Image (tube, rainbow over all chains, first blue to last red; front, side, top):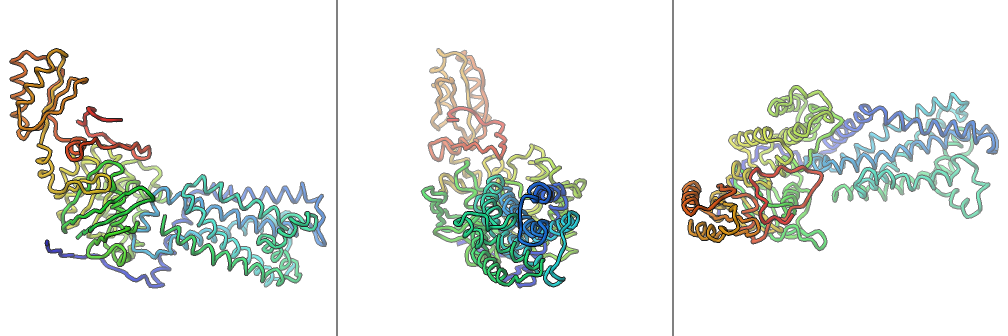
Length: 268
Length: 332
């Protein structure tokens, strides 16, 4: 047998302490935020779409939609916030599929970094982007007549719930992106579940006018619950009946999709 | 430094690795030679903890690829087949990101990034986004990124595929200098020339099995060394030419009648070539071509397996055919 002299000069940093893991997550988050920064047109387009929805529903359909109490614009904007947070999450799946295809995920997986860092970093970056987009949508909403009526605490809670909801969905999107492994497919696959969830919901119209079978779906699905929670908070109406259901949905999505995404990442 | 024992890996019904054993000593270059689909990349993925073997075990720098995967990752650098760099970031940002993920402190990672950029002649482009880089520059940055952590073991999967000849030569020189500094390198290649130039030890893979291993000299001896090849101009002189060529050396000639081509393995290339020229000339045989060939990968495969290397066409990776690769007997 030949003698093996493992002259290991490498600095082994194991196991990753929480502090090191946080550093890794920060490094990856920073990388993705730099992407948003370097490709500002992506951010611009992700804002144009919800702005068009605001204009469309505020000025074209809004007049024909009757909502119980209050103005339609106050009814509409919580729906827009939730929709924006969800559509933004689709970027998670496209970005991860792109990285996977390009081989950089392989590089990350061979580095002595925390295993959770790529996914946690990406979803955190998407959260940061959602904050920016929602701030812009708040400004747009204000310009077309939207006003908060819930008091500071309620209004902030409403926005936080929208962000938490979007964050949970980022993990669902991460799973999709890692499983389909192709940016174009990820885009198509990512938007697919959004249309029934966003349009068969209380985001733009009251569910009372829907046929009973659809209404049963619309009342209990998570997008409606997020919109209803937010709308009730912004309008100083009783909201907790919706909020606890929404929190269960958020928790369920995380419990299911965080492990699935991590598994898909390990096997990618 | 690298030990692989009985490693098997299958993807469904496709057996990628079928019981591979190999050992690479510290401070040496080991080359995995084989065509596309031979299992080279699968083995690289096992050694870099990207894939778990179904059977067998492997250790790199003393760490088991499954049990000590986390520690192992601190000791290796990988440059895969695709340039795994971030197009949106600059070259320097890419290297500093990798440094950060190796947990180097700020001063250290800046310094390493600058060193690597200089080493790979990328200093001028350091602060440009990678999407403006040429293919060769990306590849160099990719290999450079694997060095940021100064790993004692470097694993390079087809490092020169897609490089222009000059960059290729530069990279070879660089690999040699790393080895002089004590780095252990495992590289995969489709080019015998590359293995010949760099590797202390060559392992030939085919269909997931090691079919030959040794120094490149040993491998070439197995092949009978160089080949003298003649292409006869006139059909009616072909048989006479075959007789002359067959008598030149001990090995059996390879005869390709439709192309009127005869090749014979030889241990003393120049002398055999001159003898062939003299004898063929004496008989007045007219030739299209008479040449001395170094063995190509095709020859290695033909000799070792009796079949021609299967070439998968991968549109993602442009390949440079070895300059003297012949078309004889190729199925594509």
